[in-house]
Length: 338
Image (tube, rainbow, N blue to C red; front, side, top):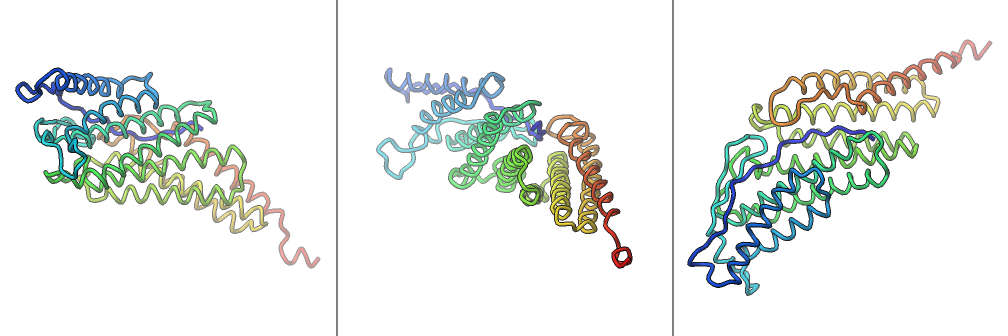
């Protein structure tokens, strides 16, 4: 498979001691505060641990979030919130706006920010796995599953928790609806890339692959549109990636649509489809260069040298040449008459 995905950096946070002298009275309360402190530290540790796997991440996240619920929901299971919700101040940086932190004295803000990082971890884990040269079928399924989990977390935060915040979300920050929508749709698009790679490996019908590629290109276009009104200084590099992938998968769609037309002896139409594929691939090449030169959050790489990119270029060229050869073999009406 050997895919390449753009990734924004993780959010950073200030340490939280959870020391409530005079409030947390008695050994059981002190034990809960101690467990909160250690489980938070453990979860933050795993975000940068390359040996961490989804099971370890799930267990650590469940451990911390289950304890944090005591600061959010009332213990008597009523609709009222916990009296401890506003007792602690939490600080978190932003994935796009660097080291400029946001702070809220609200446990819901902590839940959302930490959950955001958990979702980012799943995307990064999927990216590392998908970048391997000889990825197995089980690993491909793991990539797909991780991206689906990440999309689900982003969507859940957006719909269920962010509306509960007392302090309005700052514009252009991670928790704003536009950014969360872009993260959700990007995860959906990248998960579909795995589906396309699998369909190609199993030699499914070119028409099916073309339809999947076209849908994936639309996903990337939708994600790019969600970021279109953001400050370019923060979003330019991310948007280059989304636009690049949109052009790339549009080229894929035209290429495999051309193969479908060729199989139906529609060589002229197949050639036109492959010529469109060439145009979009050329656009993607330009965007690859621009992505590498654009400053902003994310890795500094040259996508055009990546295997996933080069393979499509060869496929478009070879398929177009095949179409042109076969078109030369088709007799014109005068030849048929003779």
